[in-house]
Length: 304
Image (cartoon, rainbow, N blue to C red):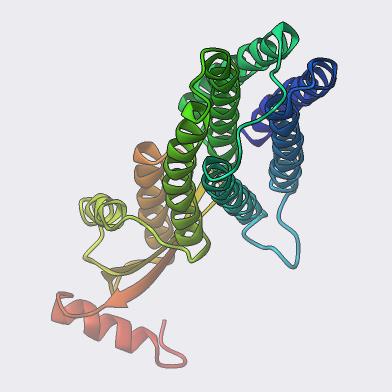
């Protein structure tokens, strides 16, 4: 899945960088400050997408002696960086909108070239949104979600730029600034949600319902007396679980291994992306007295 994410992010990066080139060229030709500003935003979006791509690639590295759980957390870190970048850009939108609402009206009116450049970028953004949304549903991943928000943000900013050009031509000079202010607030809320989610992932938060589900699976496995402890964490797509179970004290090692394997398989049948470690401990409470005596006798040196 990590490999698929990197391919999707590569396509997204090439698409948004092409939008930066087109907007910059057409913005300079038409002398449109709004389009040039949006091209700078597209360039920043390209940089952020490149960071997300790097994070997704690093997450594909196998476990090593310093990262025994693998490198999946790097993807969450990349998503968090992307979320912070969105928040900063949204803050800039809000600030710039307020400043322009209080500033004198622009003296230079953009022309048809500005609209053509903006329409190209809108097409690119729609392509990225559709691509990323399908990929999120299919393979998931916080880096793809972060880039999806970036694509949505870029689409909104470009629409605002075009609306501004149209409104200016009709005499509504402040309409685009109000729209940009609303867009900035919406994106600020989305970015805070993304930052909060990825921050929780980095602190190894896990769903209590998922822990409960694993416990039910273990308890219902034949041979298990009770569950002593369940420790779970998520790293990238993989869910790691350390489960400690109690078995009858007179259970042979081979039988204990068989029960442990059954527990592991039952969990993986329900949670396919799980990596399971089973620990078993003896429980002598419900073991018959003759079995206890037999075990004690066998532990005496010389007794066969």
